[in-house]
Image (cartoon, rainbow, N blue to C red; front, side, top):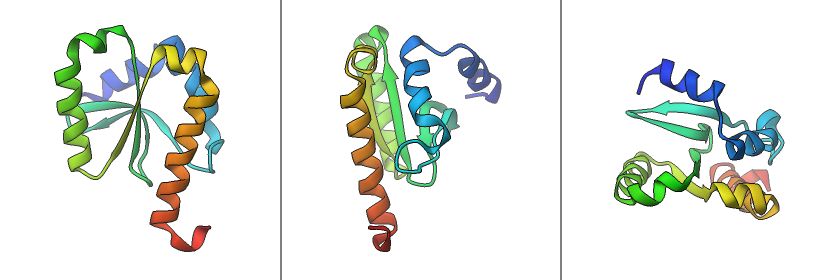
Length: 119
């Protein structure tokens, strides 16, 4: 995927991506740095912490019709050492506390595995 496509996606986030970015930016969760619309191979991850290799995908209704493609993409990313967490737009918009709790848990787990002395 092109860098220009990632830039365009950053300029035009969905409402759910915009809401989630407000809490992921500036190291607000477990002091972890997330970036948005990150090119990885031929894909663009919605949000990614490169240090901990965590990817967060926010899926809209179109993803229900492309489940096979999403599964292939997730498998490709996992094969390269990434943890992929997927949320539906509705989850981000209607249950932000639950979404943040799951992201926070993934981050703290990854930190404890990457830096055992961090606990």
